[in-house]
Length: 453
Image 1 (cartoon, rainbow, N blue to C red):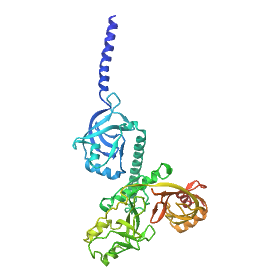
Image 2: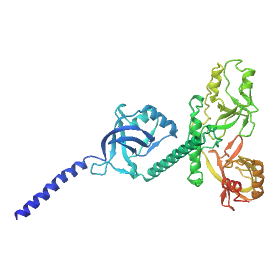
Image 3: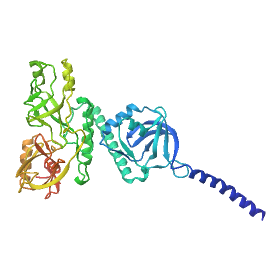
Image 4: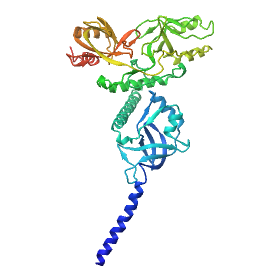
């Protein structure tokens, strides 16, 4: 009997503290305050931190911005505005007071920054961003988690490629390569407005990152892609002859010679014959502005140039003027100019392949004209990758194999229903050959490698 009483006392001694502990845990709420050190961000959604002397990642609930944002600029803003400091992480727990950790991440509702005396989300609002934060913890939001983990995969892959390229260059002791000719079409990643018309060289690095992301995504079906374009478009070419009123003639823009116009300085007689000769023929990137419907802005039948970046000199238009002691005038944005990203539709039209006209130009014939295409249209496409040594020879071979073949063209369409164009030429997002079950770039690669003869 005495043994039984002692046994009951032992059980009660165990259960009673556990009951108190469970009751205490129920009063904790969904998160617990955990001290740590703010290190930075991987993305606006994922924070890098040091918790318990270990480097950790902390994922926040879904942050939905009201406007499209430039993620690289946001990351730079946070990096410059939030230095390393002590912080309190409001971590979700497992019900027993232990921080929840899945997929190699902790999950938090927010982070309080001790030096700034505000939360991370409060800092973003102070920086001018408008957004809402989901009440659902990130570990319960499967769609958000897929996006975060996929972004991690892309970022890791990009870092691996950067490291490999660096190692290869060091081994071969080569000089740095000149910037690659990149497509002017940018998809899924957005760069909204460049600051005061200046084009810093770091943007070129960002363009390479965009190209890598597109390379990862380009084989996904159209229906899953969000096709968006910036208010500004980069177009590679060579400078022509400029007049004092800002009109540029004879410039080469992506293989064409349209007339251009840029806002000139207000100073009379600012342009000298020596300056005209200095600019003529210089390799450059023209930055063209778009209307809100996605088409490029034109003034008196000339394409409006918002800025010019001289590749050889690494100078913007403003910096080149300053070199000559001339004051730059910043252009005004008219109400019908695009000020944010523009969403384009993708529509399918079927025709027959005619010919490759240039590395980035393809001709297609159509049986019936409609509001999107005529009987015969030239479409801008992505160039062959890798580039053939002799394009004329390659094009003749390709045209011989594919002329008259059925071709489905996925063309880009502006919000107002007009075909999207670049320097007056329609842009094809993709051309697909049903008979071969391959896209244009896949078919070109097969011809280049001799798999298709």
